[in-house]
Image (cartoon, rainbow, N blue to C red; front, side, top):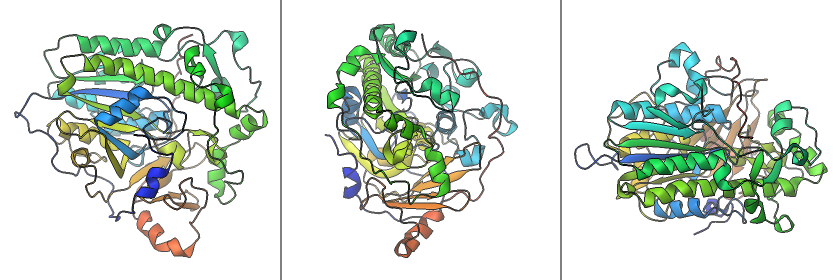
Length: 492
């Protein structure tokens, strides 16, 4: 069943707000140790995937049948939010269960093990290995698929250390003719079909190796991670996925030309100027096509792994969790990127399917964080509570998606030019607090596209005060400058 882009927001009611930012919390939902064979875990990550998937209705033309089919089998968290709207800090929060406000990891140039406080932090796969699991990884799970930034100490084996798709020939790249001041933006901002088949791409090869793992016999429970790089820019995908989204039929996302007029200075600064360049050069529709095509390709890679699981002996013993590391703006709020605190860049797919526990076609409307994945999997697999995590176990919501859940989601972003900024997303409101005290507040039911900033409206003073209680009392900021990793190019 599909949902309109923001239609689900109109169906929910605001939940109570109770101050707390840490603790694994929650009760029940998992089999106790010794009651049955341990669950395996299939851990699927998709890079830069926003809500443009069929089951979330983020774009009416999204074609993601494999992700949609998985959502029908388990719990789709309709209000899942990243801990940070950037790859490395988001993935660090997922893998450690610690929020950026705790670790100070806000950017792509800081590696958590380079800092004494977190040098020996026990990640999800390490915790599962300590409790008898074998852990394999392939593709992009941490910030890179190989080297230091893939955290080799977390894994028994890295079965794939590549990612992405081939680039088109040089003469077919950057046909849009646009110039951007940021060299990284200039290098990545492109979209074009490629003539290679699925099987010739690294993302597909990663998925295929994960599928091969699932066809083999294993004498220990396993934690199998598979990371798909697309739809991360550049949006190069086999031609058939562009053909699935003909340019002349592409619909643009909802947009308000003066959307930033009531946004504080720091918010406008985060929006940048890339979208204005894209729009001025008449490339917006081609960009939307490129993203839709890249999402459909990523979905096919996910389907390759899920088909193997469904045909394997592990189908009824394996928890599947699929997540995107953060959202992405394709012109909404005059922004074209991640790295902001609004809805489009912080909301992301999260699906958890637990055989014998989760109900089919279950939808949870409670706000949750990707930092909650670690304690959730621990509890669902019946392992001892690790303690010391910021995330909370979502096992109660996996069992009963309508269960009371008084906790909002915390999202943090710290651009290099100033300190940490935070957003609090409750079931009804989205509140943003910038470092210079600038504020935004949106009523997700009355204003599902976030077009009217209510932060200065006295009628919402009480709602805003409740949300502010969830802001971190101490914000770590001292790790945001470090040595930049060498960024490996996707397959050429």
